[in-house]
Amino acid sequence: MPDGIRIYRENRPEERVIARLCDALVDCVEGGASVSFMAPISRETERAFALPVSGPAAGRG
Image (cartoon, rainbow, N blue to C red; front, side, top):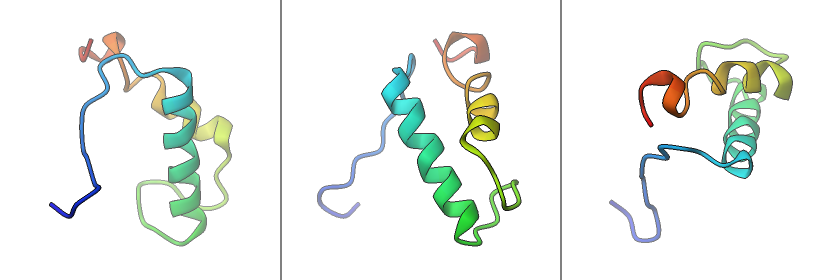
């Protein structure tokens, strides 16, 4: 893996982590990436998707 890149699992993501991940996904979709969403996508749409699949509710906590 290239220097400076770390990949790890967030078992109980903080709000700031969720917000950054939502921003990254919105940027990807708006840039034309095929990631199960179509442009335009709002932060609210992504947040509604991200919250249930993160943390204890998804069996990851």
